[in-house]
Image (cartoon, rainbow, N blue to C red; front, side):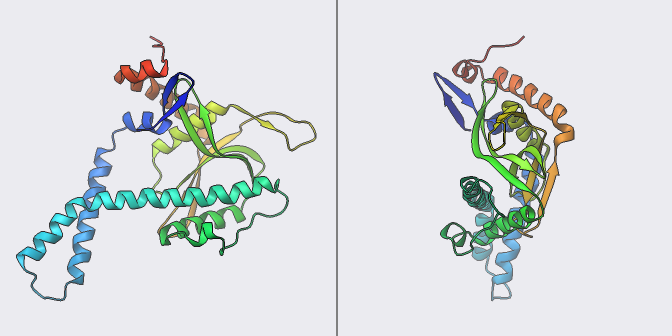
Length: 259
């Protein structure tokens, strides 16, 4: 769980709200079992002996029980690496005020230190942005809603339209991702646009999820603009449910029960 301090209040994060209101048990059980099975098969394939002893087998099985924790942490580490690399990349573009094509230097320490999977995910981002017009306004911006907070990945122009986009290095696309990016879009509403003849407040036109596959290095953009109204309605219902289930957190966040 994560929280944002805002004045005297302590707001739960968008992901905390969504996770608390989402049943992921079936997917997680399947994932955990697959992690254990994959680990056992890998370890058995590395054995030089034709008939392993009971102690060897028991050691592999006991290690398999905890393997999902290691894999889960590795996935979090990869996601963090990718987000940091993209953040540095796009903030440099903001500093350059979008003058010229986006580019990156593979010898830069930020990118040179990327792990194998993180590098594949970043390469996926690199391939994707080359096919689209991307003009960032803000990166890693904290936003606040009705007693909740969050940090969005990207707000700016995507192929000429003002979009909120979230980067994901997960193996699949899940409904919870739509609710998350919808919350960020709703919290922003309008954004100041200053890089024009007449600075003004512009309405956000769309939102989406860019999934960067860390195994294949293939990008996949999911435009969630059409489901935005439904997604934000679901998220608002989740907020009410979350605070109803956690009255202490609700008081600390200054939540007023709307019923």
